[in-house]
Picture 1 (spheres, rainbow, N blue to C red):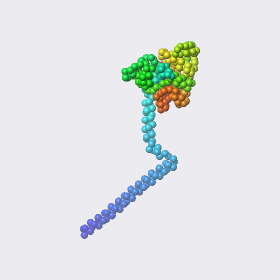
Picture 2: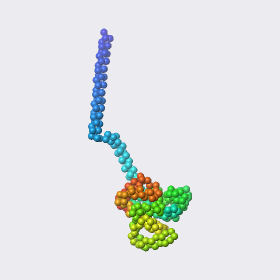
Picture 3: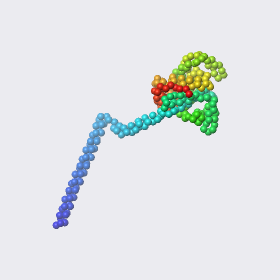
Length: 281
């Protein structure tokens, strides 16, 4: 009799457990169905209102990207950046002038520092020579390496032109206004140059002759180069900067890429905002 009672209780408990399990499974299925239905309805609602679903996933990624870009931009416009400006004869047998343009982003200034073309510079490998000799031995790369080693600076980019390239660049930007302190009348084997005293708007050919007239006069050359940058690095000039860059880059040799130019343009605009004139060192 006891055995029958136990079997009856066992069957009762098993049926009760099964009913409870079925009820639990039904409840779970109902909840899942409700959640799924609600989620789909919500997404369809967003889609109905033309909401870009990808924005949900990309928001954090874009915020991070913007933050990194902003940080990089702030870092890019700090410190000093040196640009080598170099002009040689069309046959590359003589350096007409050379200077370093320093953009000090911390101080907010541009400085022109001309160099003596016949003064020897030392290369890291122990070799030495004038600027022309460095060019003859290994081109602009060897000259840059020697200047960095001798002057203790880092040259970020360089712009090298021949006589023809320099004239083309100056003509492209519309000439440069220069105040000539006295009448000049030179007739020599290397240079023939006549110009009157006073304020003169010089085209590429005249300006190059005027620079060559100041050969050995670093202060005079620096003032002429500074005048170019003072007049041409203006807010108005940036309206056509891209077009000018395209024309100029085809007239010179440079390691400034299109991307570099965009960064340089923003950096110069930052300097212009500070209102600092171009100085002469």
